[in-house]
Length: 118
Image: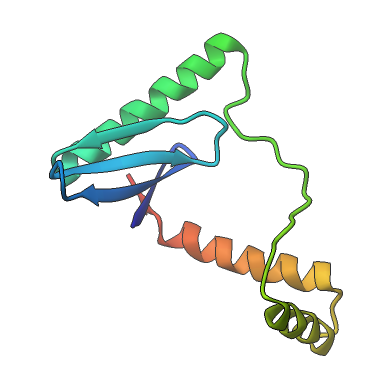
């Protein structure tokens, strides 16, 4: 799976071997916006058109194009991982929330930095 970005919006791109096309879906929005093409150049064009169309539609409807988030995150993990994470936070001199926020920030930054701007 690859990620691309345009006008501050991100999408995942995958190859569909059954239909022999590239497919994409916008990430981080409430709505489902997908697009497809038969080539790399085509998928970039389709992505840009999807973002532009989505932004126009949101503006026309008076809707915020971003998904609202509360800042609360609930994650279920294996109990042994839970213990390791809490211990890592303590050994780092941080609260669990501070440590988890920093780890998630770094992971998200890595994903965003590796997304190809088109």
